[in-house]
Amino acid sequence: MAFALSVEHEKKLAEILSRYPNKMAACIPALHLCQEANENWVNDEVIHFVADRLELSTAHVKGVTTFYHLFNREKPGKHQVWVCHTLPCALRGGESLVKHCEKKLGVQVGQTTKDGKVTLRTAECLASCGTGPMIQVDKTYHENLTTQDVDRILDGLLAD
Amino acid sequence: MLKQTTYLTHSYDKADGHTLAAYEAAGGYKSAKRVFGVLTREKVIEEMKAAHIRGRGGAGFDCGMKWSFMPKESQKPCYLVVNADEGEPGTFKDRTIMERNPHSLVEGCIIGAYAIGAHAAYIYVRDELHLSKERLWGAIAEAKQKGYLGKNPFDKNYPMEVYVHTGAGAYICGEETALLNSLEGRRGEPRLKPPFPAQVGAFGCPTTVNNVETIAIVPTVFQVGGDAFSKLSALHDWNDGGTRLFGVSGHVKTPGVYECAVGLTLRELIYDLGGGILGDNKLLAVIPGGSSCPVHLADEIVDVPGNDKFAPYNGKSFLDLPLGVDAFRGFGSMLGTCGAIVMSDQTDPVLALHNLMRFYKHESCGQCTPCREGCGWVERILDKIVAGQGSIGELDQLHEIASNITGNTICAFGDGAAQPALSFVRKFRPQLEDYIRSGGKGQTRSLEA
Image 1 (tube, helix red, strand yellow):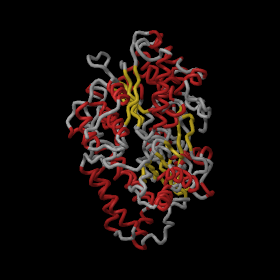
Image 2 (spheres, rainbow over the protein chains, first blue to last red):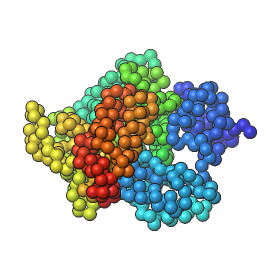
Image 3 (cartoon, rainbow over the protein chains, first blue to last red):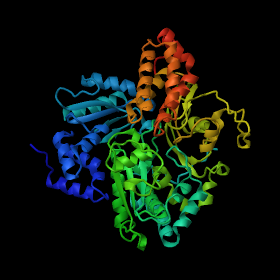
Image 4 (spheres, rainbow over the protein chains, first blue to last red):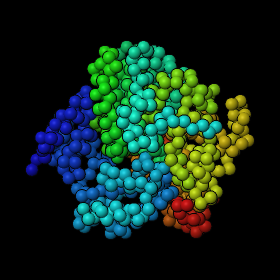
């Protein structure tokens, strides 16, 4: 079935378009909006929809989608967890935290738990170097973490 | 010179510090009001030049000078674009401004846009910083309601809008021309310069791109006066003025962001503000201003002959050299974003290099062959070395590959990626050789202190 936005999301798209001198500039915000409305991933239907609404070629929209890490080309779990493992966080235990999360969730980085609850990812520098180690859960940062903190957070996600 | 200030950080500790009420209680929006009331564009730029604000995004270009490159008369609209794509490892200052003092950035945008003849400013925030975006949109709404934005800000017929634009996860979009492409809805690949943004920037129009902190400190300049602001710095004579946010991360007891007068030294940042090395271990090395700067060993000495300005520092530890743009450039380093990454003597430097090169491999946009292929090649060699399967020949190759990236790419990412490789190989050659000979048996094999 073709992808479509709800009335509320259509209003949001119109507001996004009003910020820019042309339609192409809305490409990334529009993709974010559609991704959120499509269980957090951008499938071909979404690409066609955005291309159509912004009067762009599907090749352009696909090119943009594949350039940026945060557009998912596969459906992720209900929650997405990113563990920062770049140097400043790694100096505070970021790499160990990645391993801990893999063990706790029973998945490798990039995979989703069998129940579809959590997708585990690593992140490259989330501008939180002074408060590492840290993880991002969906839209929220959790900083200065111990493994106990992480267990509590992950248990909450798995129970959700 | 350790002199802490609170121009940007005065309300960081308050729960409601991000609100208009808190900002105005501390004198907020008086600068924009005065600028719109009595100052011409030229006068604003003059004041900014006197303030000697060196760009806080890492390149250190003089902000007033940059603004003066914008056309006096333009047939096309002009734009101010704020680079809030903070993601350089070791750099975490802009996020604190957007989350805890967003109005300083909005007011800075109003003054900056006016000075360059723009009626719109776009703040390009990386997608991950959801709280920053929320706080900025909140601040924009509050400012609009008060009449500080819109058709007649401060009762002057000079329409002004500020928008937040978001990326989608790409470090390269912190490069100003990649950022402009991303703002226009394209893949974030850097553009060739010239033309420079001041001629052809966002949407083909004259554009100034400034860092968050650079813009956020602008209202302060008009509160204390350009020259007075510059003189807060110990490096006023080096045309490196004012105050800035210094970050310290890694193996220190109290990592964080500290606002100080320019002229702070690394020793003060690490031992006074950062509380010293974790576990009271010894300092092994420090990367002074974000991961694209060279790494320096704790015992390095300043030796810059033929320049009088360095006379007081020659023969002394570089930890006592003031953190200034030209001071660090002259020393053969880079100041970058003033976010120091500290490594104690418990750190395995080979793993640190491996970690950083993984980052650059991951973030290379792939447009230029030397960077796309070179970053991957360097990472693969380091994979082998860390696994104890490298050879001395490959170690020499690391240096050669990194040298061949430098200067051979469209943007500065290539140089930034080569810098850690070149400096780590130069300074930690014995440790790298040890890995090759013994598979790293003599190393701690850990990054954690």
